[in-house]
Length: 258
Image (tube, rainbow, N blue to C red; front, side):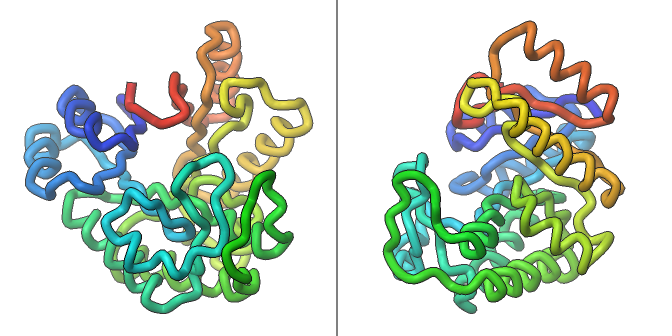
């Protein structure tokens, strides 16, 4: 497999890529030129890139924020300047698919497909602490249809692997109704959440989900753990080795690629 790194901070992406000779880099290429990334890939042909795509949320820092801010549904608890977005809007769907095309042009072979938990939020209600609603949310079923359209278009027409991050409630439905589409998944915080050890019940829930998904994919289960405790890191590494999972440990809430 080689190295595995995640970096979503723009100023650190290129330095990280230049250090990597092979393996998988999961990055956010927004604001980085196609030429800069392709130059690195030409020098390191064994380096693979998955690029970040956020189909269900909108961040103020993005250049297209003003164009789509009228689609914001609710504040995203815990992430300043980020909002859940109405993915059922056709122009937003076109935008997301076009963003995927841009990322492929930069050299990505897959996408870190974030925040499909929107399906769960619309199904169960926005119950997150400090969630502030801006407008009425669409139905969960309409969100599901929109996600299906985007994922199938990206994989079949754009030609990129879609690696969902989280979103187990959505994926338990999607992976049954559309088998063999999702080939790899990512899950944050199976063992640790924000550098605090999860409860046994939470960890068991995420383990169960990852094992369920593993039976239905040909690729890897990948997890991200926000943990710096060396003893705990060793325990998690051993568990992942036994189960054939790839694990990445981050020292920061924002993934910095170190």
